[in-house]
Image 1 (spheres, rainbow, N blue to C red):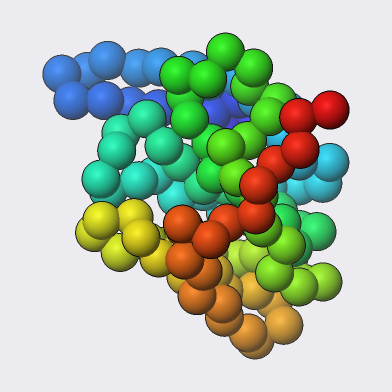
Image 2 (cartoon, rainbow, N blue to C red):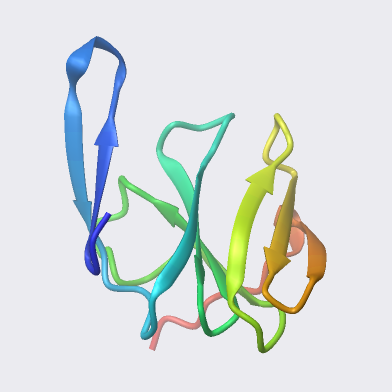
Length: 108
């Protein structure tokens, strides 16, 4: 991954490049969904965790976004069914978020 693209390797040797512009600061963590191959989560140095869908035509608008704290997100993980997201941060803190309760994104 670089500052605007995510390279995804798939079974059978297929490679996809997904371009998105969803964080103003450095992305520190990425997690790919275990339940849905089109979903992934990104965590930023500004404390935001965002959920993305590769099939969405507008790559700059996440499906959902959640602000956890003022520390950089260092790791993201989900349970097998993507119901809960665990986020760790540089402030020696972790948050458990219910994906069904992620904040809604305003489409301005």
